Image: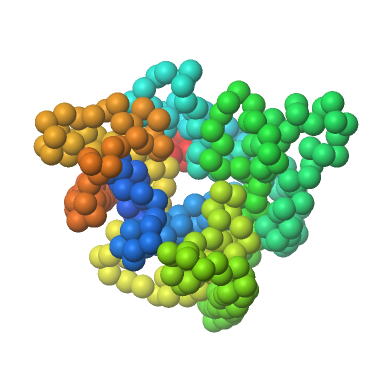
Length: 385
């Protein structure tokens, strides 16, 4: 693997800035969870409170692949990169089932609820990506794009086995792609691995584009991003138009934007990653305090994720106590599937106020951790957070 100069690698700030931006947006959705506000609705305020957060998971998976590529360029050792992806991926899976779960629920009762969430997905996708590392980056990227485009074929995998085995195979396959079986162990699978692994692999291949000369890099990013947006708009509009049903209260434009996330459809991926990729040239040139703040978040994504779940949960209990005289922790024992009674839901104004306060607190914590991480390069384990 050809090693690139640290100077060339350091100039790629767009990954940190865009990742930091979607991390801030993610906090809106998770405050929404604890506020009991529905995930979308027919009015613009509810719909876009949810919709704007759709950019988070695809950007996480995509830029996780890009970061893996850039880290591989830095260390110039594919064996070491494979080892890092395997160990960090398994570390994330363990985090999901322990620390992340506890921060979401403040409960140690595993008999009632186990979630395969976004950190679970990212962890296993890193493990799977490690298996492809020996291939050229462009080949990995192409495989990822094909996996996204033809994801539905994976629903037929259990049917390739004898009928007597389909149930057993299907219960395991539910972790990879929905096939109408009950997941093994009754685990709530929120994020299947396909096509998310394809998105991460596409991001790995995208790293090649980021290393090109700025003018060419910007042109390619704009072409890819705008083309994705155009395809989404044309194909999505036709589907919405021909599937329009009288009496549907959701406006046509909302239906266009209301794409499937679980699993992420092809249109969902185009809708979310198209604008993000198109913004890369702008993110490379942005300066100022806001950009610097986003970059801080983007440099410590896992630390931010852990802290933001814990902080949002704690602030939710405080807000509930101030409003009702009780913390109502019982509402959150199955978070993120929170059970907040409709009469106790927060107004959107309160949701966004709490979100703003939490982001400010998170910035202070993340800036400290970012500085600590830079000051202690000898502590190898900090790379995992």
